[in-house]
Length: 47
Image 1 (cartoon, rainbow, N blue to C red):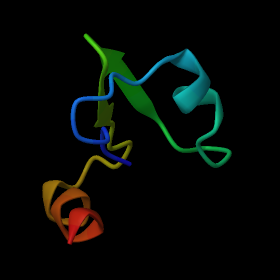
Image 2 (cartoon, rainbow, N blue to C red):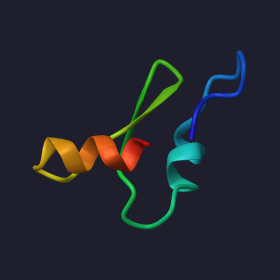
Image 3 (cartoon, rainbow, N blue to C red):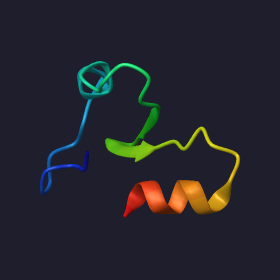
Image 4 (tube, rainbow, N blue to C red):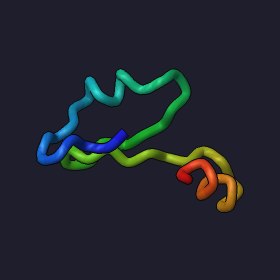
């Protein structure tokens, strides 16, 4: 999930994420948080 051009996201956008999906909301930007320890798995999930 990314911000819509110019729209700042809110805590409601965090609550709308699927169960188990981790993210951080910083200054209206949503940053997905990888819970895996393996760096390559994290990167492949982003592709």
